[in-house]
Image (tube, rainbow, N blue to C red):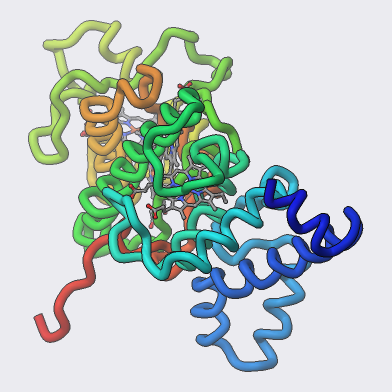
Amino acid sequence: MIGRFFENLLGGRQNVFWFVFLIVTAVLAGSSFWVINFIANVDEDDSEMMAEEMMDGLSPIYVDYFSEVDEYISPEAYLAMAAYDQQFDEVQNVEVLEGLSSQEMIGYMINHVSGGLQVNCDYCHSLQNFAADEWEDEEAMANKASARIHLQLVQDLNREWLSELASLTDQKQPSGSQITCATCHYGVAQPQVWPEDQVGLPDDFRLPLEDFYSLTEEDLLNVNAREDISLDAVQYNQQVMYHMNSAMNVGCTHCHNSRYFPSWEVPAKYYAGHMLLMSQFIWAEYAESMGNQQPSCTMCHNGAVIPGGSAVSVDVMPAPLVPVPQEAGR
Ligand code: HEC
Ligand code: HEC
Ligand code: HEC
Ligand code: HEC
């Protein structure tokens, strides 16, 4: 409809293309609040370089992930967002992303949500009304509902779990990267959480997600010098350890002094223990929304120490999805 309208107005498809192109450029320029933030923090020389890098396809948002948004966001969707942006200054019907301006919202949706899953806006929206929760497309409605649950998930993980990394041990500070949609989705709408084949590990092996685990009352994974446990338990510990190795593409010494495995002297071990607890939390609270797939370390790490699909810092995330800043002078 809108397309036809502009076609008549501008006389032919070719012009519609340029019209859409201009709107798209305007929307992108206006809504890329993190880019502006980012550029505001570097000198002018740097910002030229930055622009070039972005043209080259390196994203300043992610640790190591890039998504070519124009390949799946349609011209109709860009027109619809321009219309929404004109009509509203603020978001209308949100449960998690409260307080965003309509431009911030569009920027976040393009780069993190559509960009993280590599889907068009109409995967979750009626292009006639982005605020609607009910319209005739039931599949898209269901996707919007799932996405809302996962916005909550992202908020929980960053606020309740990553925020604690800094105080786990004096010897290590986190990189500050944040969990976002691409951290687990990596450009796929329905991600497969467990690798099909983990070299050397049985296919049915899973992390200890149901049993009690605690960083202080160490028990679950302890095997050293214990007479009270079976060889099966020892083997299970080994499988968990090999899974960690392969998920992060590291050796045992990334987390252990290999002369004495039980000691807590390598800081990454604290992080790994905390991440196991975080995985237990995901399983306990969000299993259903993940198609009952049990979390793995590979789900996020995907062969890297810092997950490539995570956001570089809180600065490129909307405020509702990251830890609340501490009051100054506390
Ligand atoms: C995977 C699902 C998904 C995709 C894809 C998606 N969105 Fe959203 N969008 C949501 C959810 C969920 C909300 C509600 C957020 C909340 O409740 O905090 C939302 C909210 C919005 C809003 C705010 C509407 C209001 O209430 O005023 C806008 C605008 C929006 N999205 C635009 C877009 C645009 C533009 C695209 C494509 C670039 C897009 N969305 C892609 C799931 C999605
Ligand atoms: C902790 C990992 C994780 C994070 C973070 C995450 N997701 Fe998911 N998501 C999954 C898994 C796993 C599935 C299940 C896929 C399946 O059903 O096969 C899923 C399913 C979905 C679905 C349903 C897909 C379908 O077609 O049924 C939507 C929509 C979705 N996620 C949106 C999002 C959005 C938007 C974000 C970011 C705000 C996000 N997710 C963040 C792991 C995650
Ligand atoms: C990503 C970090 C990480 C990697 C890599 C890793 N581990 Fe572990 N390991 C842990 C954590 C966390 C525990 C649980 C510690 C606890 O709760 O006491 C553990 C426990 C152990 C234990 C039991 C120690 C005890 O107290 O009884 C052994 C043995 C062990 N790991 C061996 C290995 C071996 C061998 C490798 C390489 C194949 C390896 N680990 C790789 C993090 C790691
Ligand atoms: C939902 C996503 C997610 C899952 C699941 C996850 N991690 Fe992580 N992990 C992260 C993010 C993001 C960071 C980066 C934190 C930082 O440095 O700011 C991280 C960092 C780490 C680090 C510190 C890296 C370093 O600098 O040495 C270790 C160790 C680690 N994870 C181990 C694990 C293990 C083991 C598992 C499985 C039990 C796991 N993670 C599961 C997201 C995840």
